[in-house]
Length: 169
Image 1 (cartoon, rainbow, N blue to C red):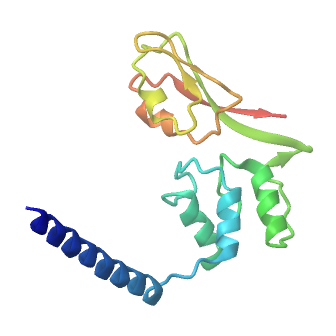
Image 2: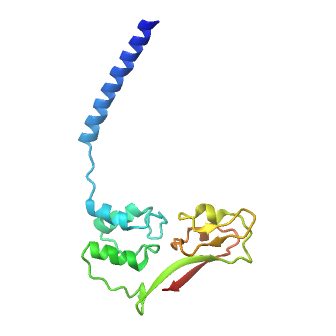
Image 3: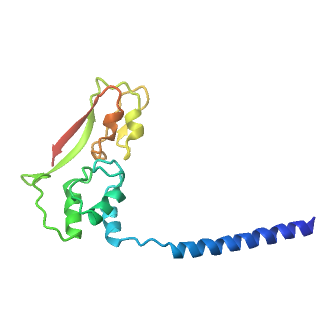
């Protein structure tokens, strides 16, 4: 009995060592280089993965900015502040005529028409930043401070009581 336990330990120990060597070799052989500029842009993005930029996530959008010369103003939740940060990082000269009007920042959020809200909680479960609060069966509310304007909740509301809201600071 003791001998079979020792053999099992030796067998699995040797197997683990061999597989570790194989994994280490393949990790070094097939290493992917990470572009530091893409990483910096990705860290600036809001990480809501909303898809409003027509990319599946923030990292894909950051990669497209560098590799495909994509426009830097496609991130709605990031707004004009993000556009300025990215342009500063990439040394671009930009005019923010589309996102700044009379030196006022434009913010995009949503609001819930509380007369039509049935309290289904679908919007709250799909909000990537938890800006919608409420209990199932009761009226929900959007916390404007946390809403980034990704509009994911719009498509999930069965009563169409969620509306886009634009306001200026």
